[in-house]
Length: 394
Image 1 (cartoon, rainbow, N blue to C red):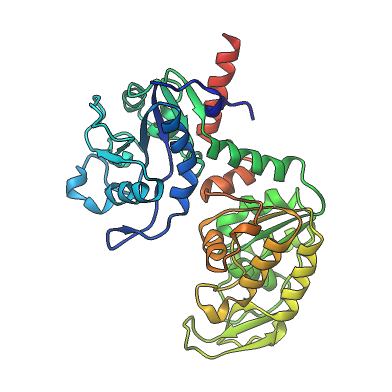
Image 2 (image 1 turned 45 degrees about the horizontal axis):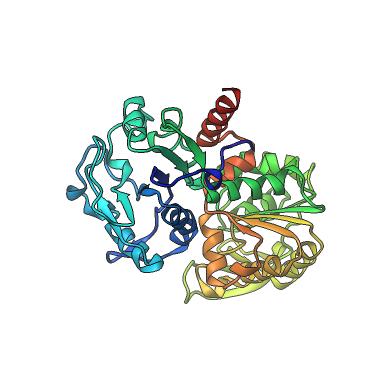
């Protein structure tokens, strides 16, 4: 994808504004997961070491637009600034009032307060976009996880910034996904888990045309089992999606579970048992896949050339029901295939089982990851491509 590469630019003494995704979980006023911060740090450190005047902006949660951060402090980026300092050794200052310009305080990095409190951010307001663009000499879009949102701080600012480019994190995401989807090593397997078929309908349809094998897990698998006539008891199942599931089963190789772990309740103390899918009782729900199914999926994963993974295969948040997700995670991590994993639950599983080192590329995006897989254009990427095209014409 033709976009200007941040790493190719002369940035010394330039005001470099980097849009990162620092939307991290915060518990009791402290950042509880460093994953997104660690992903963003190389870009920030490159800007600092290159002699730029570094400004970083991000959102955090869903604050109310137009309401000062002092009235909704739970959405402040102050805890993020503190953690960034700790992880990087750089000094980080937070600036709350910046849209009309500001005087840096001398820190290595200036972190602008939550962009989502700015009126017009979610509507991609042009006036707000131009005010943001005026803060910089170079705008760096590095937040893949927000690239599917046409907002003022993502896509909106790009046409108005003096120079607009893609940061290394964004570029790496795009390169990895294009590699997996455009010219995949065969056989290509996609593993799509989650609770509902309806939320991943377009992804399943799109992948069905690209992959050699489509593995479904979690509540999605329940719907596909039901489409074959299996009584899934009180498992999560979308009956209005049965026709779609049956149709996809007729066109794509989808290995469905043959044995499952079932329980009456979703809690760690509930009784559970292993059974064949045809022996599920009306008051039971599927909470994990069984050893026979795990072994079949392990064999498929073992011979794959490319693996695209989004979503767990069971209720892995409860340790007793996480055997399937754990074993599949290890199978993907130990595979010689080029593997790309994305989505919040997927990343949580990788972290839980310590398998990060075995995955070829871990995407920081959730919705953006899925929309890219669907084949949709990501507004921020489209805007960057257009700016690069215009620059080359000139």
